[in-house]
Length: 237
Length: 120
Image: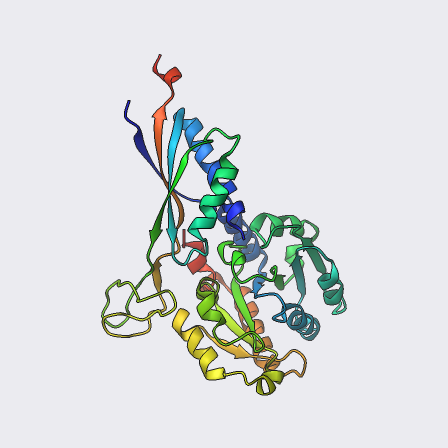
């Protein structure tokens, strides 16, 4: 008997995508703006987040989930900001998925939050495939990493809504070629906005905080005014 | 390396469909976009391990790699840029932020044999 071909046409990560869509609905219903921070290891996600939580805490109700392969170190650092922080230890898993986020949220009252940060596992490959229900995906690239990072990891830069250059306080000493880095981003994701920050000396932090506050305020606005930043991911498969 | 997680999801989805169809799966056809962030060889390697001991053990994985296509805001076409590292219209050179194809991570089809038991 001849084999027959049965068309399926189903996203391989359908379960994750469905759960992410549910999370996105819950976030919207509660008026929480959700930011997914992705980068390679050591780009400065935790440092940026610690300063960000501290700065915003008096003005907005903020919280964070932080993914790590093995340790609770990042959560301990972030708790110094005074914001509620939940660690997600992923074990050998190199990315966060929607289920891990949903589980970690069990202890949170979303209605009591304005802004939730999710610090992904340090990895420029795997987190790109997993929608977490976020509104904004921010990719960090430190000036210590090499200007061609976006060309080496086009998928994660292409899927981001905003890029941050971090550690710009040491850019000069390292001979960071800013124009080359901007050109690399423009090549893999034309039009991606880029902010330049140093969590250590505060450079560019005001612009970053203002951007986040503005987006979080829009998230609490009536649906028609909302920025559909997460929409391009919701429809990709 | 998240190809193992993806292979496990793929095998689960294929097994579910195989059970619904009451059929034995010979080939699993997958569409993988160049911007999906998944390496075909790594997925192949993981697929065999993920399928072992399941209803689709021994099935072959056939991967169709899908090129990146973009919408050109200047000439309105949907061309393929020269590479995922340079999203520009190959015809007019305009930057092309909008990606219309190349992110596929899709179980496209199953090639199956009906189980003998279903032909009573």
